[in-house]
Length: 233
Length: 233
DNA sequence: AGGTGTCAACTAACATGTTAGTCAGAACAC
DNA sequence: GTGTTCTGACTAACATGTTAGTTGACACCT
Image (cartoon, rainbow over all chains, first blue to last red; front, top):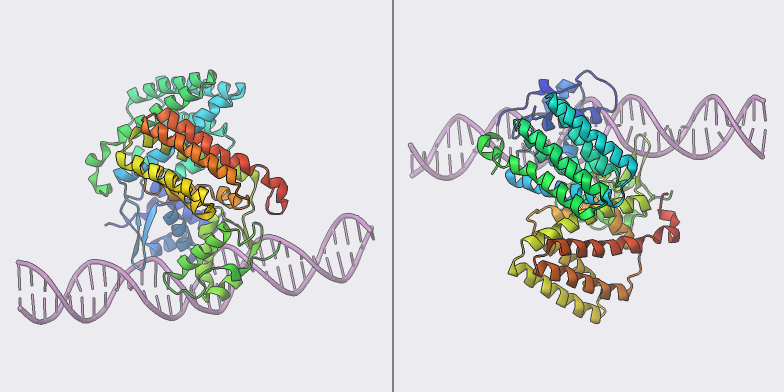
């Protein structure tokens, strides 16, 4: 498999923070943005050259990514960007669904005026952004909607945990062409989640969130056939 | 804070596997069994002596444990066993509940005769073990009950993920004196979970599992007052 | 006595030399 | 042409020397 293109890495000259963290964040971002193709070989020496650091911080950073499942390190052989697989995506999606649904149920059981206000405004904002075809911003507002709900749980690491547990869902999502009709559907689904939270109806909030999250993986299913090069069976 | 007692580590002479893995597994086990007291200082040099390896594998192993939240590495200063905190326990418990509940719902929606048979036998076995006061074995059978349900999801890493996401729940659990009456309650709760799965009633299975899992954290709440030495507030 | 500055000891992070395992390809046998 | 063996280049893992940041204790000043 071809090598990754280190020139796609960000912050090569930024010298702030610990070298290990710089390499970790930079490589992780490249993998999550698909700038590093799934299956490609990562050459540690190339990273050492690029960041102008020794092998230690590079090895440490890749070890961390290995724990998260973003790279595969074959002992005494080589390091590769983890391939996508429909199995991994479905597994990730199960974990994400579990945590998102539990968060929605919690939000309904512990609703506050403040939260409802934030969610209401969020939906209004996204509605406007979709009308104006601001796809990029609408996407970010969508993520924010989920973050607001997760924050009600007071589990501070929840947003990070969800992303860490389901990296393949996020990577695969980038391969989809964003259908405008889907954005409208998203808003409808968000509204029904908010409605359930307003009524303090935990079951309804959980069900609405479950339906919402399942739309994503449902739309990811066809990807494997379209891009077999970056999928491992 | 006092240093950890390296002599409590297992397998000092076992020379199989990669050094990094040996150190990692050994130290992790010591932390999870509370052989390494929460808050105690881990001296890397002592680990090097104990395992007869250089600083590299020790540092790598502790980095992995740091990512999992089991040790706190203070840059250029020192490494400590993560303290317990009721906040961390509640956060862990939320994640565990979310995943266990989702698993139970899935089991009810995808029930097979084989699974029902295994769960039925598991409950019978635990009933006998409780009658015979085989506390240790009953505990293991309890864990197995949850594992069977998680296996229905086909998410192979689920049992590992649950444990990795909630280490503080497992550590705190060791501090409790096992009340015999609790074991009897456990069996009743397992039965109601199994009943719901038999009926393919996802909502009921989820609710039963939620009630069951919440018993644990409810019983952990008083611990902070009893053992303030290993809790950080 | 209480607060402050300095310094020495200790620590993790980083650099680099060394070891051993892996793999692709060449050479060879059939 | 096909399958096998060998070999050399490449890799991650490990050992060890070096650097720089933190901490706590002690002396010193107020």
